[in-house]
Length: 148
Ligand code: CMP
Image (cartoon, rainbow, N blue to C red; front, side):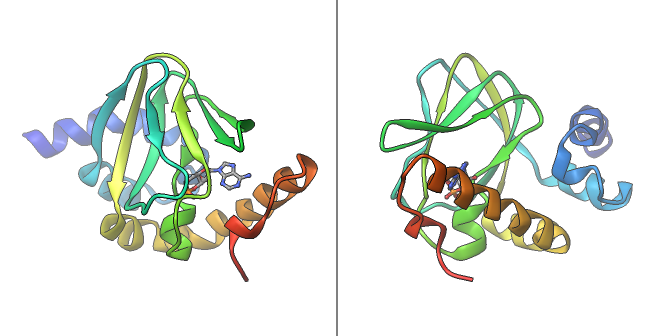
């Protein structure tokens, strides 16, 4: 059936996602059930800095960059995720994310993100410390990271 097909389709992809690797297979299959997919072309804006955000993204094909004040703060490859910060901290998008070529993403809405990725929230937060370091190194304002 459809559900089985979708799980099958995303199983291999999700196993390659750093953040989801540590999840048990059952929980990961729940994530797979809720994913939707979208494609972007070179130059398309996936996330707009300063906007309200309700979506968490995983890049499953192509390349993207995160930008702040016209500086590249991160490059994304297959298996990387982004857009978690606005959802974790209930704040506007901290950076812009732009497609560098044809990209395919899978995404979760805020509700699914909270429900399904709640168990790995600590791991997500750990990475936020790296964001702060990167911004500091580039001389950018870290206020967008938020408190705690
Ligand atoms: P969010 O703020 O929701 O939207 C922009 C995304 O850029 C952010 O989540 C992170 O996933 C990502 N990002 C990558 N590097 C950084 C960084 N140094 N600071 C903040 N966000 C970053």
